[in-house]
Image 1 (cartoon, rainbow, N blue to C red):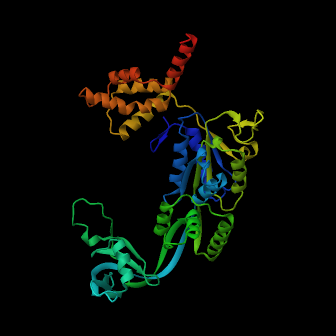
Image 2 (image 1 turned 45 degrees about the vertical axis):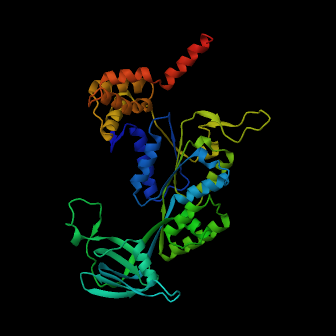
Image 3 (image 1 turned 90 degrees about the vertical axis):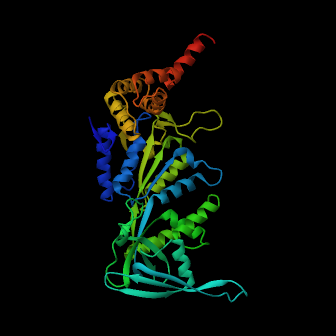
Length: 429
């Protein structure tokens, strides 16, 4: 049976996406969105997430559902535009003067508060830093001490301080302290090499959406954490096209100078058939942009009406495959996902049970596989946890076939529910 890294089945779909992934790594993905089509529960979302993971942890991944674009606060195209920008990363490389080393001393010096007759204030802070090559003692401004407190720096931590801005970054705990505890969640790093005062290349990963928000709301600081704090405080902010064009010019200049590198990520739009004609027109234009992410669309519809094409006079709208206009559909590389066979359903159930730490008897797995083949894979997966609860109620550690049979009388799947309603209509109940 075909399976890889916990993903069972869909061999042809995985092979097709592997070919498209090679195009992406070659930089030839622009204007070539992937459309995943198939019945519900056939792994379309899992395939899209796997693509993002295959590109690496530093590559941005933005997933939305088609119905999310309909908001009362901002325009539909603005939601799509911000999603595109979230899926485009920018890797900024800067060479800065820094003081780097293991903290050997951290002593704040207090003085009388000149603004009041009582209380004391921090006048300066003495920080000792050690590297493999030597040590250095620094006398720093109180604002730097505030940054040190925010990073929760203590003696034994490895930090670096930017010489120009005074920004402090905690790298981790020195590996000289690695034997302090048998088990802890601390990250240990080696003692820095070279001098304490050095020039260091720093790499920062941001998205174009982060830059949009930082320039739309510049108050409160320019670092990423300040930007995220401002995002939490208010509602959704609409960024103008003029501001985005100005940011794009700055980004292009940085790329030409070799300071930054564009990192196209993955934009996954599930239930793309929920978009309307205005959104599809915007998608067509955005896909032609040189700053375009790797776009993956998914739909479980057949031939249906494109939203936004029916008028109020009762006339039918434009009908198209998967609810997508033909001009956009013509751009897509379409990948089909097929319904799972019974053996594949059993393998998926076995993998899920192992991931959730459940012990299921082989006969019970066979019964669940039959339910998945008759009803749906999702229904069978939903029965795993309730079956484990019934087994614990009986004082058993394994899920048995009797637990599955009992659940069959407690819950209805979609097909059986529809049959019940159909019978009631025929009986005029």
